[in-house]
Amino acid sequence: MEKQMPQLMPLVPELMPMIQLVAKDMVAQNIANVMWACARCEIDAGAPESLFETLAERAFLGADSFNAQDIANIFWASTKLHRRGAPVSPFLDVLPILSEVAVQQADAMKAQAINNVVQAIAELRNDVFIADFGEDLMAVLATETVKKMRQWTDRDLALDIPGIAHALATVQQKKNGLS
Image (tube, rainbow, N blue to C red):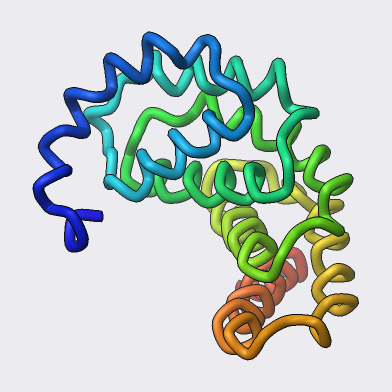
């Protein structure tokens, strides 16, 4: 976002308190959009932890209402924010619950969503979660990838399949003790 709209970057810290005021009333798509925007705006350790606590609480209470794209955005954003040191640990605690919902939503995931989720799981398993985090979801998404590959566009095949394959291989290598 900084490269596309640098004039908006100074506004992000000013928006955080306003977002926090309405966060307690957010629905799944709002939560996913805020998390995505925080990641795109490169929010870091200076972000208010209370915002992520409120968003995580709302996500926990409404986990069943998240659709496939919302879940993919949450996984992607949580990983990006965690990597930058943003205080998203409350959200990381919700990801296993969203992982269970994602298993049910897997057939609705497009290539980019699958790529975002498997890459996030691979990175988070390596960093903050127990070794088998997302195991069921990874298996389901691998199956979905094989089922859907013939329907995917050239863009999907060029950009998302390599990412999916790399993430799945990374997880398998770690599982086998090869990395």
